[in-house]
Length: 246
Length: 258
Image 1: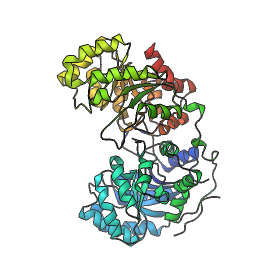
Image 2: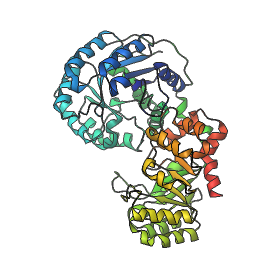
Image 3: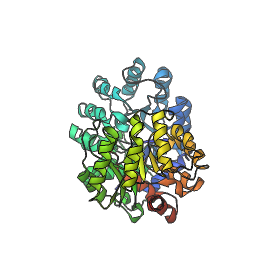
Image 4: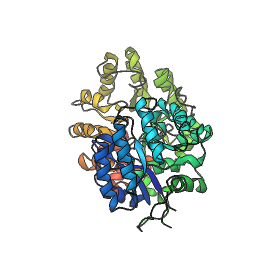
């Protein structure tokens, strides 16, 4: 039974943690049986999107179990649009990642709307850092860009109730529940709100967070084996067109 | 889009993490509550909290009613003592509302008379800063009675004023991002401890154990408001010895109780 992690990172973080090169990712993946991991570069998220994406491309070249997200900085939209095309052309990137905290741009801003346009034009899934009630704007932003599919990374953070209702109302929105403060009942709440299991994904935030954290959330969520299969890999394989080892 | 297949790699037994192991056994969880909490989407009574713990690897817990911190400390303490009298797996924790510190002495005497050793503070809910007179009064009285503080809030703010006082303090809200600040304090404070609740980094637990010792770490889940399995799995897979794991899961709190 495979596992695909759709939310992870490669590289250094500015906290008191041990996390460095992509081999750290692979060690943690092996520990928990994670087959494939979709990663963005921490440098690209926190500091310099283009330089971080370029460094990640080199790391991915020799590690076929890792696939990349190209980070798009909404404040550098033309530069990021060209960089996204360059990354996708490499064949080792399968999506785009947009953070909201580090660039200081939220859904509802002009810059974020332009960034959504760029990702929709590229035709790949978007992993969006979501952490607040601005998630209520996402259904309209996604619905107005046909074909765009957005993974709500952290499932809204503290705004997980709002995120659940947003996802329930829009077929282009997916929930991914990784976060340190593992509030109980988030998955059950989302399901009661109407989010189908087909739009729930497994993500870890590794290597910022140990993958067992998100595995524990799934264990406590009480999925059936068939549902777990979907959340742990089938939904991600379908969304990204990934093949996994038999 | 179809991408290339992956290379073969060694897999652990399928979904091994899905089944709890003996290495997840927890003797004492220091962070358990029950009762109404208006901001949450539903209330969780004591009976359901006990069912959750019973289904988990947690054997015992330090618990209190939410009535004390949110509404009425005296009535809440009475409720906790009454409710938990019939719950052998739960030990009562007391609280004092730092917004009404003039009554703190009476509250603490009542708790001491009932044999309560742990005092939980709710500075976030009660909007108390470390310098507020009421907060300082409560802390002074509790430490003078030799109580163990179960302390919420940011340890970077509440920790420094508690140093050099021989205080036994368990910080309940330390996020992995703030670990370095806690370790700096713990080097000098043998009585400072932190719970595992938000030590989510791949080596956060290991950094505490290997830099200042397992005695500074205890298990705390915040049941029923947080999932338990992320925390027990983290301890299960932590690169620490069985003896260190037992200290974190059980022995450190037993020493405080003895």
